[in-house]
Image (tube, rainbow, N blue to C red; front, side, top):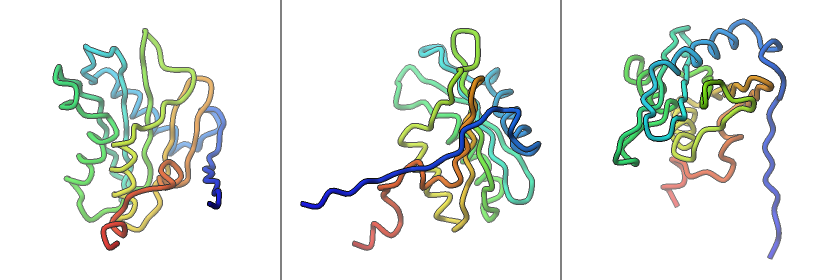
Length: 160
């Protein structure tokens, strides 16, 4: 059996190194922390989506006592944006997480379900989505969602 290696690439820096548009998107994600409903985990996540037309939509995680019924910030923001502008591609997504009274030092990455939803949006519009993951000490910038989910299940997978 042949062994294969799957790699992913991303840029790592600080918030100050981001361009103004990316800083704005991160700040919109950070603002959403106050709107998160996370009484069970105490882990607050905010996300902001920028469409190619310049519109920005933000969302926060919404927990539920029946845990699988909650929804992550990334999906809240993405579904909201797609519902308002179903034919406009997504340009970028920023994510920030807050717990124990402060933002995390290191970035938090999207869960598997969010990665799948983000990939579907990227595939749907045939446009790469830049993902910006905020941490107080470092920021990751991923050029396209596929980098987060290299061995993915997508529309083409249904064709056999």
